[in-house]
Amino acid sequence: MTLRIFVPSETTALSVGADDVATLIKREADARGISIELVRNGSRGLFWLEPLVEVDDGRGRRAFGPVEAGDVASLFEHDFGDDHPLALGPTEEIAYLQRQQRVTFARLGVTDPLSLLDYQATGGFDGLKRALDCTPQQLVDQVKASGLRGRGGAAFPTGIKWQTVLDAKGAQKYIVCNADEGDSGTFADRLVMECDPYMLIEGMTIAGLAVGATQGYIYLREEYPLAQERLEQAIARAEAAGFLGTNLLNSGRDFALEVRLGAGAYICGEETSLLESLEGKRGMVRAKPPLPAIEGLFGQPTVVNNVLSLAAVPSILSDGPEHYAGFGMERSRGTLPFQLAGNIAQGGLVELPFGHTLRELIEDFGGGTASGRPLRSVQVGGPLGAYLSEAQLDTPLDYEAFAAIGAVLGHGGVVVFDDSVDMAEQARFSMEFCAEESCGKCTPCRIGAVRGVEVIDRIINNDNRDANLALLDDLCDTMMQGSLCAMGGMTPFPVKSALTLFPEDFQRQGGEKA
Image (tube, rainbow, N blue to C red; front, side, top):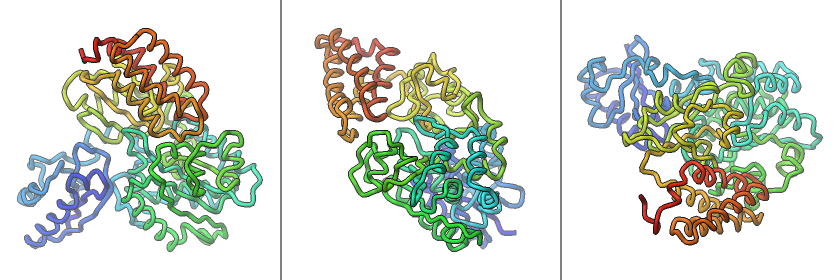
C-alpha cells in the first residue's frame, strides 16, 4: 500500500525546516523505491515538536518529532517504527492533545488546508447547508443560544451584536473579520487561516446570511503572508465550488469575500480604527456612538468579529447551539484556544472549555518554564493585559473570574516569565508600547503614555520615588477613565498590576537590579 506521510506547511513548522524535511522525505522515498503520498497538512499546534511528521500505514496516524533534515534517512531505516528515538506513538494519544477538547480546532493539523474534499469529509460546510434552510432570525437565535462571546477584550455576546445589525436599516450590510492579530503571544488566528481557512470562510458566510450582508472583508495583518496566500486560494476554490459568491449552493443567496491587508498598526485591532483603515483612511479610533453595528463600514450596518468568533460559528450550526453551550462555565460558554508562549517548555495551542485554571495550562500542558527556573509572572490577554503572580495561577479561566482580579482573558494569549524578569522594566515597556502604537486622537493616551515612560524612568532611578509613584498611580487612573479606546484605557492594567504585585522591583537603589 501507499504510505501517507504528513509534513506541516504552517509558518512555525516552516521556520524550523519543514520544507527541507518534506523535500528529503520525497527524495529518500524515491531512492528506496517506496510509494508514498506526501500530504502538507496544517500544524497540530504542538510547537515544541515541530516539524511534527505523521505517518499512516493503515494503522492510523503515528507521530515523530521534532524531525530535522538529518533524521529523515533514519526514519526510513526504522520503517517509521515505534523503535525510532523520535517516535511519539499514535498522534491522538499524545498527552498534550489527548487532554484537550478541540471543537473549533478539531480539524487543526488533520487535513490539507486547501483541500475542499478534506474539509467536507470532516464536516466542513455542514453548518452552511443548515444555515441556508434557516431564516436570518433563526440563525441569530442559534448563536445567542450557544452563548458565544467575542473572543477579544470586551467579550461582547456575538448573537446580540448580530441582532443589532439584523435589525438595522441599511442599503448594504457588511461582515468584517478582524484578523489583525497583534497581541503578544497569540497565534490562534494565524493557525485558523493557515491550517483551516474554509472554516473562517464558512463562518463569515453564515454571518452574512444571518444579518443580510452580501459582502465580507478579512482585515489581515500584513505580517502574515502565508495566511494571505492560503485565504486567497481558499476563497477562489470556494467560489468555484459554489460555496461562496453568487447563488450559494443554488440557494439564490449571495455572499462575496475579499482579503484586505492592514497597515502594520496595532491600533487597527480596535474595531473602529480598523474600519477607518479599511476605508482607506489613517487608522484612528472613532468616538462611539454610533456603534459599528449601526454605522460601520462606509456608514452602513456592520458586524465586526474576530477570527475566533467567526470560526466557532460553523460547529454551532452543524452540531447545534446546545452542544457548544455545553462546554464552559456560567456566562463563559464554549471553548477558547489558549496560546502558550514566552518562557515555556512546551509552547503551543491548547483548546479547553472555560473553567480550567492557569496552573493547569502552564504546568500540565506547558511543562513549566523553558529555563527551568521558578515562574514569577504570567501576562494573559496581550500587551494590555494585567501581570499575574504565581499565587493567582488557580484563577479559573473565565471572563468574569478574571475581571474580578483586574485581569482580562482577551484573545487567550498566555506569556510566561521566570524569576529573572524585571517587572519595573515590564511596566515601562507597557507605557512605551502605548506611546509607540497610540493613534494620537485622545490626549490621555497620546500624552499619558509618554509621560508614563518618563515617570517610570524616574522611579527606577530613585528620583523622588514616592512622589513619582503617587504620580504614576494618578496618571494610570486618568488614562483608564479618559481614553477613547482600550489602547489608553487598558495600558494601566499591566502597569498597576506590576506595581501592586511586584513592588520590590520599583524600590531598587540607583536603578540597579537586586
